[in-house]
Figure 1 (tube, rainbow, N blue to C red):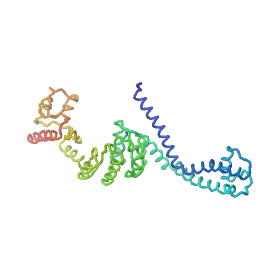
Figure 2: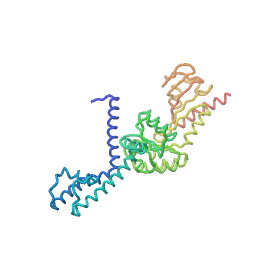
Figure 3: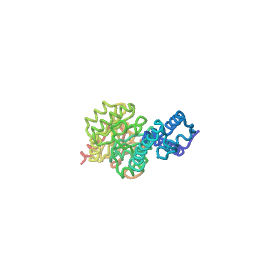
Figure 4: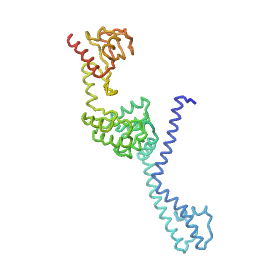
Length: 362
């Protein structure tokens, strides 16, 4: 049976909400299980035991349905009968108020902390929601870069869970708008990563500005999910190379490595994308303006592609409509814009030849 995409998404979101409610119930149970267990054991187990002691002491057997009520009555000092003389029975009259004091003290404190403190309640719900995600991308570090990465992932249709040590109202509002749960905590801890369902994650992106923290986080993430692709932001190129080599990281993006081509390209009037490595070979894509008198000026698209082992994926003439995958007989003119994809070594050669001819003609 085929289900329309929009309906599948609604079903998926509804199922996730149900799972989140269940997970949140488990969170509440973990918070309250100690006082709940003590209360249940005291009321039902203690009630049954008190009934048996009554019979052994010669009293009439109380209906089993009345025994839990008797324990609750003893807890709140609503004595159902006169204080018995038998010490084993009298002990319940003094023990039950102490049990009630513990349950009330521990329970009320947890209730206030969990339900009446917005921060604690929100974090519990966010953790419960994040734990239901599958095949998602985890982004650690919701700074300027992290938020941009999250926006890009959401636009690409990916499901995202964020991790950060602290948050701000602006971050909360933006993540809520994007529908991304935030797990607050130390990202270096296994418990924090597990709250973000790291074992079920599709990929892990580290966006903090601290190289040493990124290293520690990468080690922890690789240990929890050995097969998951990891992308790490680094500042030091040497540090980046070591992480890529020793921790089987998908990509280590050095700030200087990313910025250098952009700075150089901007100075020459071109745009260079991040290099892609495929089967050990580096490939790049550039946008450049054809210089007057260069080897590109006046040549046909097909001839340029064949002779230079490159793919011209877009041609933007000075006047006219931009063409994606232009025909091979289209002529390139000075001032035209080309988007070229090829081996990185070939790309740098094309840029150098285009610039060299222009400099010589000046």
